[in-house]
Image (cartoon, rainbow, N blue to C red; front, side, top):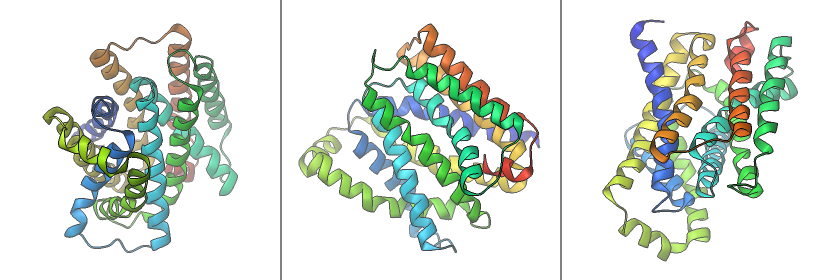
Length: 290
């Protein structure tokens, strides 16, 4: 890869990793539902000037609502006590779910090395499960675990959008996402609570929300899609391994998060398992899925 593109890939990893910290800060002043709605609303703004992506509406709706489920779940988890750094690691476990679902539904059987990686990462998730109940509830953890699952399914669907400009696609995905998000916002928070939160938002939190929408989603996915078009997925995807390290490190610096021995071991094992899957040599089709 060219040095500039390597720098761009690292930049995206930093943006996505720090995004977990920004989410935690924003949740001090608003609900997870409102934060997710604002994030997608900002992402949808470019659709005013960008053409509709030339792909099936069914596919666009499916990807959009899966991403809504992913971001709602990870934001809900952080809102209900799951540390931002731990959330970053759990969300990146999408890699093992992606490979597993590709084998289950697309009959793209993983190699032995990939199976080993899945097993290692699964052991790490099991270690993390053993720490549930001390500082966050089982419910919060269960909801959070749906985030990597939704992420993985959307990965498989996004494979069918290779020829579609990512900026156009995610702008329209953001617009379509507003339907379920506004409905959830009306039912869960209600107009009065929503207006109160918006009217009292601080400049710091407003900056966090803008960064999540403009940088984390619009810019981040645009760069990522561009890199995947110019290089093989095997060259690009491993940079995603930086996300949990950056997320956990930034969270520890900003919030002084401390992970117990068992939980820290689980986080390291999950990342190691993902590394084995993504960095090992395997059939190109599975590289593209992960």
